[in-house]
Structure formats: structure tokens, C-alpha cells
Length: 466
Image (tube, rainbow, N blue to C red; front, side, top):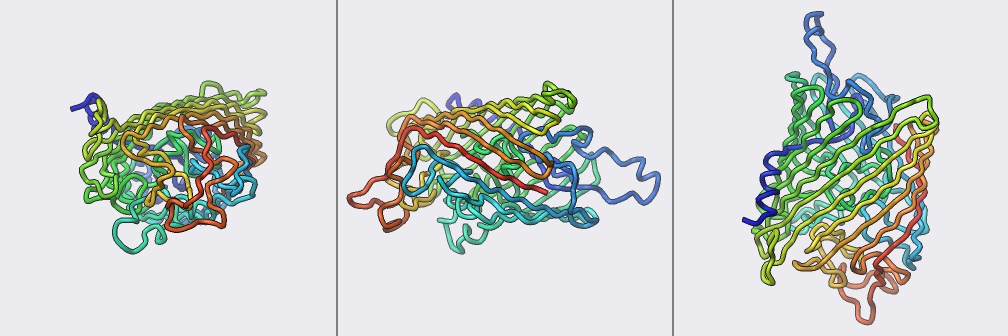
């Protein structure tokens, strides 16, 4: 057994995991749901504290900073999200297409990344959540999932307008136990799928290139109001269906010992190479967030930082975790990201600086550029993802937020992204003259995409959530 497998497989078994943001009734990583009102004083006295309700965690990245629920009723808490952005790439792609991001997709245009309408249902311990994803997410998220290529019924079309859709049940045992089935957020990579919740618009690769959602079953167990343990039984790595016969297994553990620290561990095992059931994937994703300064009346009102480390590999089916050979190349993932944020003038303004890097031989977690309409299923000969293909990338960003209300953020962000191979859209773009030609991702005689090793961008966004 290779060194990477000896380290990663035990880490997966040890680290069933959880994370997600929390608001009363609204969906978050805790998944906590308000319990029915007690019917007698004795029952009320025995009621245990709700998970993570002992402090204000709205400062966390990945967690909505709203503290009020204007659309709250006894059985339903409504939620509305709007994410509109304008991004300018200094590479000036002629087709306005940005490559290599799961958050930003067009240059020089105003685009709706997501319009979300839905909320949380909660009545007599029965729970459910619905959130739509109209806009760019409805096209860009499904194209990163190759599992619809196995079998029938167009799974990518069936689910493309849903970011969250599940039903479940809550038991009043320990500090709460929930079982949910459907599509739910993963919080692998720390950041939320929804930009309003995050410190930055474009997260680094260990967040952008890891799962935003899972389709399956999660069991949320709260042994105390500071700890959550969440096993998963899911179809696969951010997939609507299964890639092979085996499901994906994993989980999250989240511990918040006080109002200034949040520790998260995510671990995963699955067979996520389409048509290759012998190839196994393991991955661990671990984060810490620390708020080290909090003076509401001072010019600098808060200060906090995050650090995330990811490691994983694939083995079997023609690859190995380490010590690769020409017949079985090493295929692994190593990455980190770190962010530091300051809040000013009673949290009216925010300033975030951060970035990260990855090393992913085999490119199994690299987003396929949309060359000639390429998708994760089609692939493209212009940018291969074969065993032995090298890929290293790094990035840095500066983000400034103006937050005149808890329900709105005006954001300006600058990004620098780079890789050791040509990957980002250049001035010539990634679309053949006259539009996509032939099957998605296929070769076009006499034409080649313009890919560059670096990209600089500016983004302005208006983010609304209530």
C-alpha cells in the first residue's frame, strides 16, 4: 500500500464530517431546525440548546451574515437570492468566455450568476428545503458533472434548475438528529455555493474545484450544541448520478468550541471515473476559521482568518497514489488556501486578501475549459485530463465589500490566476469562428483555442439575500 493511501484512507475513516452555515430555520451547515413549542413546562425545561446557537457566527465565510428572517412563518421560511456580476478579463477573449472557474463565466458582460427562490419547510419535525438556480449556474454547474453520460433520462436537464432540494425528519434526541434525502450543499472547500455568504467572489482552487453539492442521504447528529457529525451516502463527487456501480461515502465533522473558532473536516471515498470502476478516489478537506479581534465600536470592528488544506488521490484502474510508473502514473491532489478579512465602521465595509495553490497530476479535479462547447463528459483533445498530465495552479485576490444592509453586498474584486500549462482563455477565445462546431469539445480543422498560462480579472457584483 502506498504512503498516500496509508495516510488518506485512515483519515477518511476517522473523519466523518460536517460543515455549513447556520441561521435559525434557514438552511446551513448545521442543518438545525427549530423544534416544536413545548406542551408543558417540564418538557420546556428539558429542551436542550439548539446546535451552534450559543454565539453569533455570521462572521464566518460560507455562512450568511443575515440575522433576521423577514419571510418567516410557522411552517415555512422563505428565501430569495440574487447574484449579478460584471467581470472584465484583461486577456480580452473575443468570445467573452472565461475558462477554469465554477463562479465566473463571461467577460465584459453583466450576467446573473444565480437567481434563487425557495426556502425551508418545517412543521412537526418534518423538514425540507428548496432553492432554485436560474441564471448561469443552471448551465455551468451541470456541465461539470459527467455522470449523466451513463444511462438515460438526461439527469443534467432534470436537475439543472435546482441547487438544493430535499426532504427530511428531525428527532429530538441528543441535541438533535436529522435525516435528509435529496440534493444538499456539501461545504467541501469551506466556501458556500452562494457568493453572498463568502468573503470573496472567486474562491481559490481547493474550493472552486471540489464539490458544491451532493445527491443522496445525509444523517446529521448533534452530540452537543458545539459539535456536528454528518455521514453521507451519495451518488458521487458532485454528481447527479453514479459514475459506476458503487456509491460515494464520506462525511463531515464540525466543531465550534466558542464563538471565535470553527474547525471543519470533510472526508470522501468513491469511484468517480466514468466507466472505470476499478479506480478509487479518496479526499480529505480540512479547515479552520478564527476570529481574533472583535471591537464593534472601533474603526476596525472585526478581524478573522481562514486556512484550508486538501489532500487526495486516486488508485487502481491504471493509476496510483504515489510512486507512479509509466504504466500506472501517480494521480493525486494537494492544495491549500488562506484568507484574511477585516471589517470596518461597525461592519459597514469589509476587506479580504487571500489565495492558494494546487498540484493535481492527472487533472482529475481540474475544470475542463469549455473549448468548442466541451463538458466534463465530452472532454476535449485541446486540453486532456489523462493519467500523467501535469497541472499546477495558484491564485491571489483582493476583495472590497460595502454592506449598507444585512441583506445586500456591493463587491469589487481583483483576481490573478496562473498555471504551469496554458489553461485560461486568451484573446482568441475558446469558440471556433461561427460558433461551436461538431460534437462538444471535438477538433475543428484549421482552428485551435487561444489558451494562456495566466489571467487577471476585475469583478463587480451586487449580491442580495433575504
